[in-house]
Amino acid sequence: MARRNTNRRVGIADVARMAGVSHATVSRVMNGNAAVDPDIAARVRAAAAELKYQPNPVGRSLALGKTDTIGIVVPDLANPTFQAILRGLSIAAAQDGYRVLIADSSEVTSEEAILAGEARRRCDGVVLCAPRMGDAELEELAPTLHPLVLINRTTVASNTPSLSVDYSQGIQELATHLVSLGHRKIAYLEGPLHSASNRQRLAGLEQFQAKHPDIELQFLEAGSNFDSGHDATDAVVASGATGILAFNDLVAMGLLSGLHERGIRVPEDISVTGFDDIPFARYTMPPLTTAAVPINELGSLAWRRMREQMQQSADATEAEESAQDVFEPRIEIRRSTAPVSLPVG
Image 1 (cartoon, rainbow, N blue to C red):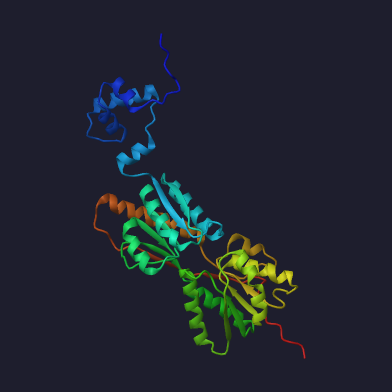
Image 2: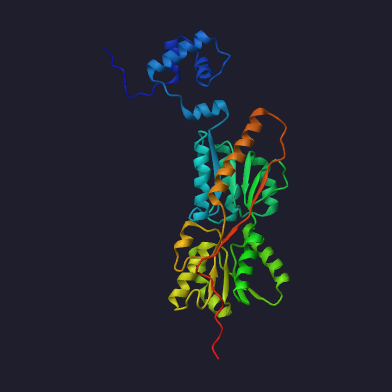
């Protein structure tokens, strides 16, 4: 007697044979099509249960036109800020039965559009987090990714929700804090060239300079990670600045390390500020003065905006103007900033 191969995966044909129906009928029942006769549907479900049939998730996704997955494209997953946004997004999406597919462009601008397009073909929607691409490319790409949520960027398309931080205001408040401590020579360690949030910081510092023409403000090349802050140490020392505005907390931490290696004390000899308030910022030596951004909230709100977009598409209603959410940073004053030390004699 032929023995049944217990290792063979039970397929739709097996269910159709046992229930005495077509493959198409099994597919419709498994996908929840209410048009199938209730008695036939019950027979199909009974056969599927007896055979312990599990629908192929890929085939089911193709049939339904949905994957229960969304994609997120980030410029640098090693950055704790993007990790926290991802965590907030993943937790919120999971509560609604969705998974998150992650793509990291590694700060390579030319890769972003490719990764976003690939993610959209595999997912029901895409979250673009702090994309580095130019405005023109983003405007051209955005309509092809709908439903789309942008973090730290905006487009002219009214049906694309965006979540952004007022980096301009945050950097001005940090600079004003240094001025209140008596600092008159301030240096800004710039972020990546294509970073929109860096451009916003630069715009904010331009406004700050207009209000404080007596302050000497220098701009030094850096980047967005620990190494770039560390590598900028010599330039910072040579600048003669007594107060430093770093692009983000990672850059500030790299600078703290470089200054410590050279025997330069923080904040006695030089004050240092960061931006973002990542979890490590309060545990540096000394704890870092920074502008706190609600990064976990950005992720969870990104999911809510995505869900709203998908519900609009499912309802086939006319697209409504989407929300543009702006978060104000909160200045956290810690021990990395102090009154400027006056020269002796």
